[in-house]
Length: 183
Length: 183
DNA sequence: GGGGATTGTAAGCGAGCGCTTAGCGCGGAT
DNA sequence: ATCCGCGCTAAGCGCTCGCTTACAATCCCC
Image (tube, rainbow over all chains, first blue to last red; front, side):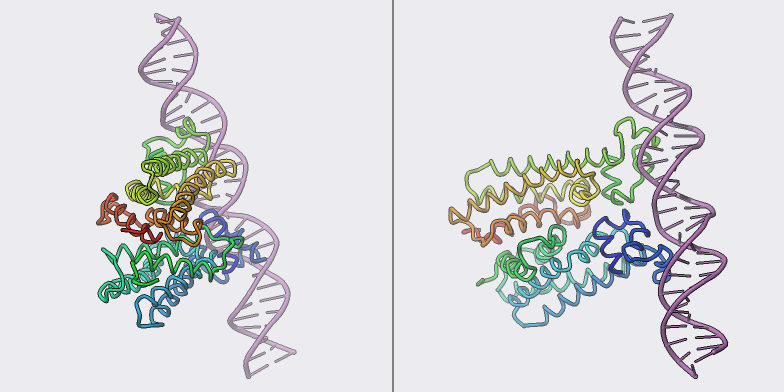
C-alpha cells in the first residue's frame, strides 16, 4: 500500500503501472495480486483509508469544544496540517477519485459528504449564534475546505513552513473569512 | 482541441486514448496527427492556451484600478468566475500539469508563476498601505488562489449559482480573509 | 516433523495503446 | 485542364498494459 501511495501520488493512477508499484515495493508484479485483486482495489483501499482518516480528524476536531469559533479553528488547523504532513496520501485522496470504479466511488463519496456536512452545519450554527458572518453556509463551508484540500496540490517536503505552522496560519485566515467576531 | 478538452477533463489525460479524442471530434484517430504531432502536444496546446487566458484575466483585473482592495476584488471575482464558467478547460489546466513533458511543463509553470506573482505583490502592497492584514503575503496569496483553483474541481453546469454570482461571493470571502478594512 | 496456508516467483497471454504508413478526394492556383 | 497539397481514412505495427498460470519457499500449528 505504501508503494501504491507513493506511485499514485507521483505519477497519477492511470500513469502508474503494476510493475511500477511492484518494483517500488521490492516485489514481482504478480505478488501484488496476492494482496489485492486488482490495481483498482489497491487504489480503493488507499482512498478509503485516507478518507476515513480525514473524516475522523474533522469529527474529533468538531467535538473538541462547544464554541463554533474554536471548533472551526481546530478543524482547519488539523485538516490543513494533515494535507501538508501527509501530502502524498492526500494527493491520492483528492485527485484520484475519478479513477475509482462506480461502487467504490460511492463509498468514498459518502465519507466526503460526511466531512462537508460537519463543516456546513458548524458554519450554520455559528451564524445562528451570531459569531460567524456568511451569506451561504454551503458556499462558505466549501471555501474553507478548498483551502485545506488545495494544500495537497502545492505542499512539498521542501516547503518552508511546518504543517503545524501552516495549520495555525490557515486557521486564522479561515476564521477571518467567516467573519468571526474576534480573531 | 475542443474534443481534447472534453476528453481530458472527463477522464484525465492518461485515461484518454487518441481514439476517444478522435471519435469525440468525429474523425479517425490518424486525423489527429495532421494537427498535432502527439497526444502530449495537444495537451500542451490546451494547457498553454488556458494558462494564457487565466494570466491575462488576472493581469487585466490587477491593472483595472489603483486601489489594492478593489483590484483584489476584481481578481477574485474574475478568476473564480472563469474557473466556474470554463470548468472543463480549467480542470485540464489545473489537474493535468504533471502529464506535460518537462520542457512544455516549464513554459506553463512560468505562466503560473506570473499569476502567483501578481497576487502576491498585490497583497504585499495592500499590507504596506495598511488596507490588508496578512502575516505572510506568499501564504495569503496562495490561499486566495486556492479558493479559485478548487472551484474547477467541484463546479458543474448543474450548480445552483451562476459563475458571476459565485465570483461575487468569493470576492467578499477573499477580502475578509485578507482583513480588508471595510467589506 | 508432516502438511496446509501464506507469500512469493518466472513466464507469458490477450488486449488495447500511441503512432505510422499508404493512399484518396477535393479545392484552388496556374 | 491540370496538378499540387491539405485534410482525411483504413489498416496495422510494435509495444506495454493488467492480470493469470504454474510452481516454489517459508511459516506455523499439532
